[in-house]
Length: 432
Image 1: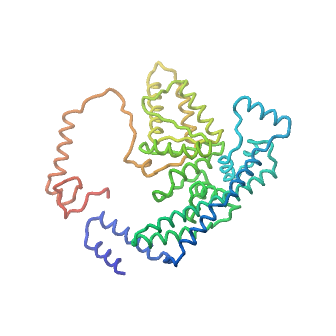
Image 2: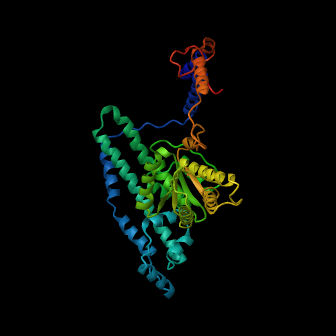
Image 3: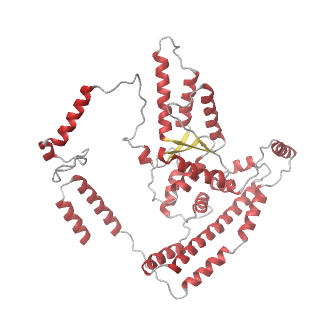
C-alpha cells in the first residue's frame, strides 16, 4: 500500500527514537483502519428531505407521552390504604419531610430495578403495582427516545436545507446514520441502557453498552475507558454511573482534577439535583482547612448520610492528598512529643475514620484518570522551619545546567529539547 510504503520510508530515514515510535503507532492505526468494514455512502433522492421532515414532525406531534407520564405518576404516588401507612404519610407531611415520587427518581429506580427501595418510598405499592409501573416506564422511555431521535434527524434536515455544496455529502451521511440507528439490546433485559439513552439523548452503540456493563457489573474491578471528547462523558455519563453505583452500602464518589472541579460540579449538580432531585455533596481540603473535632465529626456524619441515602460525593484528587497529608502531619506532631499520650487523639481517630470511609467504603469514578494518576503531579507539605537556599547548592545546580547545555561531547551524544542551540542531528534525550 502506498501509505504504508511512505511510513516505512519515513521510519527508515529518521533516527529520532520518539519520531520512530510515533510513526510505528500511526502505521498500526492505519492497518486497523484498513481492516474496518466498509461504510456505505448515501445520497438523497428527490423530495426525500420533505418526506423525512414530515415523518419527524408526525413523531414529535404525538402527545401520548404526556398521558404516559401522568399514568406513571398516578401509580407511583398511590395513596396508602393501611392505617399505619396513612399515619406515617401524614406525619411526614406535617413535619415537612414528605417527598412524593417524581419521574426522575422513578427512572433511576427503573435503571437499578430496585423494587425494595421503591416499596420503601411508597409502602402502598404492591408487587403487581411495581411490575405495572416498570412496564409503563419502559414504554415511556421507548417513546421518549424515539422522539429524541426524530428531533436529532430534524436538526440535520434543517442544516441540509441551508448547507453549502461542499458540506452536503457529510450531512447526508450524518442523516443516514441518525435514521438507521437502532437499539441493539432487549429493553426488558437492559433497563439501565434505556435510561442512559434517555438522559444522554443518544442510541447506545455496542461498544458503549459494553463499557457501561463493565463499570456497573463489578464495582470492585478497576476499569479504564477512553471516551471521545464531546460524547457526554462528564455531563451525562459520570453523574448517571455515580448514581447507579450508589447502593446504600458504599459512598459513590466522583474524583476530578482540581482544574475541572467547578465546571464538573456545576454540570453534575444540574443533572442530579435539577433533573433527578438527588443531592450532590462536595468536600474540599487543603493544609489550612478546619480540622477541629466538631468539623471532623460533621464530615463523618455527612459521609455516612451520603452512603445511607444513596447520594453522590464529588471531590478533587488534591483534596484527598491534602487530607491524607494532614493526617500524617498531625500524627507526627502528636507522637513525636514525649509528653503526649501514646494513643491517638479524638481528632486523629476521626480523621482515620474519614480516610476509611473514603477508601474501603467508597466506589470511586475518576474523571481524566491520566491527570489524576500522573506521577508528574504531586501534593507535598513542607515540614520544619523555612530556610533560604544554600549558596553552594545554587552554584552546583548552575554548573550542572551549564555542562548539560554547553558541553560539546554531550551535544554530540544527545539533544535536549529545551536547548535552543542543540544539535538537530543528535537523538532526543528520553527516559529510555
